Image 1 (cartoon, rainbow, N blue to C red):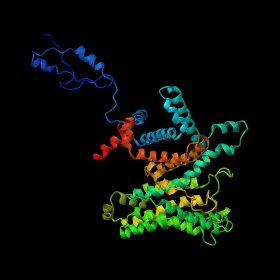
Image 2 (image 1 turned 90 degrees about the vertical axis):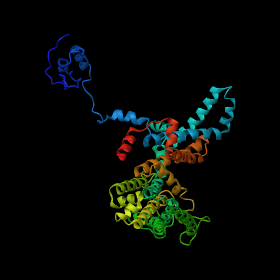
Image 3 (image 1 turned 45 degrees about the vertical axis):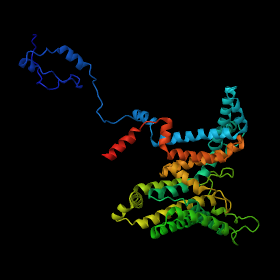
Image 4 (image 1 turned 60 degrees about the vertical axis):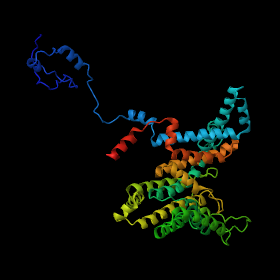
Length: 467
C-alpha cells in the first residue's frame, strides 16, 4: 500500500484555495492510519477538482441585476405586461370587428383559398390604415409635420391631435379618480355621471351669472363645481352610513335625478338663452372659462389637464401619506377592525363619497368651463360611466388612472379621425375600450392566451406575505 505524507489541515476541515474561492473538503487522511484496508487517496486528482471549482459564486438570495430582473419580468404575469398585452389583444379583436363590418373586405374573404395573398393583403391594408389614422388623430400626423417643415401647413395642425387627446383625457381622469378613491374604501361609486352633472351645473352657473375678473371668477367656478359635486356624493355617504342603503342603488337613482334636473334647470328664466329655441343656457362668460394651454382657437386643450394631474398627485399623497387616506384604506380592508381601532367608519364613508363627488364635479366643471360654450343636456356625454373603465384599467391607483385617462382620451380623439378617413364607425372605439377592461379584469385569460409564466417578483411577494 502506498504511504502518504500527513496533511497540515486538521481532519474533516475545508482546505482553503490560494484565491479564497470555495474548495472541496480536504480528505481525512488519518482514517487510513486507522483502517489500512481503505483505498488510497489520489491527492493530485483532488487538487485538480478544487482548481476546476468556480472562483466566485453569488450568494443564494442575493440581489439580482436590473438586466436579469427585466428579462424575468418581460414575459411574466406582472401588471404592466398583462395590461400591455390586454391592450394589444383588444386591438386584435377590434381589427376582426373592422373586417366583419366592412362589406368589401368581408366579401374578399370568400376567395381566401383561391387568392390567399390578395385576401390577407387587402385585410392588412385596411386594418393598418384604420389604426394609422387613429394614431394620426390622437398623437401626431407625420404628414403635417413634413408639410410644416416645408412651410406648407401651420403648426396648429401639427399639435391638433395631441390637443384633442388632452382635452378628452382631463374629465376622464377626474371621474376615474372619483371611482378609484371610494374603491379603496370598499365602495363602488357608479354615480360619477350624476356628480359630474351637478358639478357642471355649479361651475357653469358661476360662469354664466357672474362677470368678475378672471383671477376671481375662475377659481369661484371651479370651487363651486367641486362643492356641488361633493354635496351630491356626500348625500350618498350619509344615507349609506345612517341607513345602510347600498351605494350602487343610491348612485344609480341620483344619476337619473341629476340628469333630469339639468334638463329642467337649463329651461329656467335667467339661465336659458333667450335667442335660442333649443334647450341651451346662456354662454359662459369669457372671464369664467379655463384658459387654453396654447392661446389658439384651433387647439382646445386647456388648463383642465394640468389641474387633473395636480389633483391626481394630491390624491396619491393622501392615500399613501395622509391620515384620512390611512383611515380610508383601513375601512376598505376591514371596517370592523377599523372600528375597533377607533376609526369612525360612518364618518369615513360619508367623507369618502364627498371626496369622490368633488372629484367627479371637477370633471363636469372642466367640461362646462373648458370646452362647452354653454350648458346643454348632452354636454358631458358618458364621462361618468367611462370613468369606471378608466379606474379599472388604472387598477384604482391615482397614477394608473392618469395613464388610463390619457389612453382613453387618445382612443376617443383617434376614433373620430378613423371614422373620418377610414370609414370605421367611432362606436368601435367604445368596444375596444370595453375589451381592454375585460381582458385586464381577467388576467388568467391573458396569461393563458400568451402563456405567461409566474412573475418572480409577485411570487416573492406572495411568499413574504405567507411568511
